[in-house]
View 1 (spheres, helix red, strand yellow):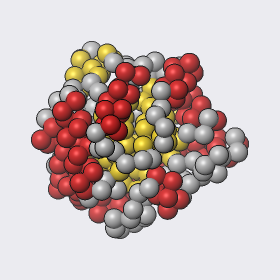
View 2: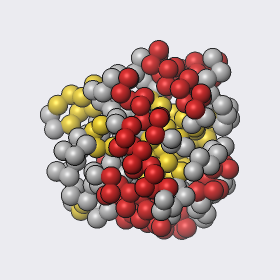
View 3: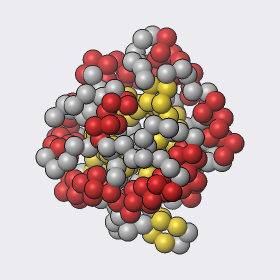
View 4: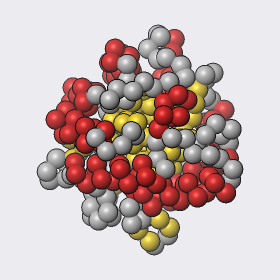
Length: 278
């Protein structure tokens, strides 16, 4: 099997320190967390930015501060989000101007449920295509985020319109608690894998309590893994994770037991076809 690419998803755009005090929010915290995850075995870091109040932001300036800070300390592949429930595309696309190596490209709409609220995250086909065109123009590798099997239709559309270059890096996001999510079960992740187009490389993210199970299945089936406090604030039932690095360390231990070697950032660049932008 290919060496295992581990992505560290440090902090999302929804929950904050109220969910886990170890969640990094300010640029210095995010930069330090990224460096710790690099030392633990991650080769990609998935970045969300927060403002001074800890709320999600698409500020080019904050993304740039984070990206430059990480590059000054380690050779991680930097993957900026273009997500953000409630943020318009005009703001979300600005993260691409912060010179990331890669960026998320959400391939459909979902409604997140959090603390009794419904948080719509709408991605129209025209917007998905606009993100793909912007990434193609900037030579930024898309990480295609799919929350259920129907979203493969958008991947096919992008391929047919020649808006993607192979290999296609597809993140199967399992277990989202909300409308449009696909429960994180073994059968469901196998269904998603069966839908992969030719020339695809797959990564699996498990949201909440299914994180470890989904990561384990990905390792066994030759895929890659995303873990971190964005997706799950617990280490195990009733025990908060102490850091993002703790979750990375667990994946490294598990991969070693299951016979998967860990990819370095340079090896991950070769596997995914990502150039060095530093």
